[in-house]
Image (tube, rainbow, N blue to C red):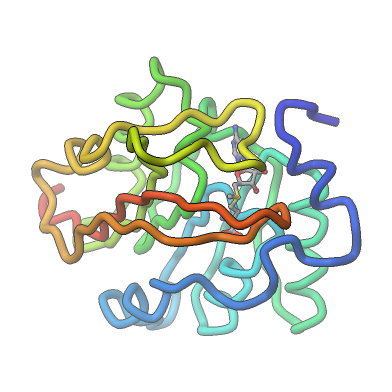
Length: 205
Ligand SMILES: C[S@@+](CC[C@H](N)C(=O)[O-])C[C@H]1O[C@@H](n2cnc3c(N)ncnc32)[C@H](O)[C@@H]1O
């Protein structure tokens, strides 16, 4: 079992660490790329599966991975309770390999685990595995000199520079781009995050 992330421990109980409410931007993604038959979604860093299962409920064919065995176990269990099937498996954002292409590639709260030297290759990979007209969603925690590191900051997490995420999609059509500061209570201690978000569409092959 991996000890590279505290999430293995945080996901070991029957509770869902992040709850079961789907992510804020899923409805926007669904509107931008509606779930017609056979549309495929990839969730990178799916945690305990709340968003992957929600997308499967909406009718997409969903694949999802996370570094934690407990997260994947709970993702599969959550899907089963809703009589859904998801292709969920353990993998690493730094090294994963996928041959197929997706209509939606989604990753929330996870690119801070990309090692600096892997960032360019990762986004080249994202370009390859996204279908033409497909849509991607990414967010990144960004550093601000007036904000402290969150109390539950994990072993291999690294803050991004403000605006850095947006530089990886120069040839895509931007559907949303923003930066917000919000309060969070994860880990039981109130704290603030600054987060950059991008939703964009692949226009060219
Ligand atoms: C902030 S949580 C977000 C989880 C999920 N996306 C959600 O919103 O519920 C970050 C996730 O990244 C996963 N993670 C950590 N290192 C990873 C890696 N190297 N590759 C893939 N996932 C990783 C953690 O296990 C955790 O589930």
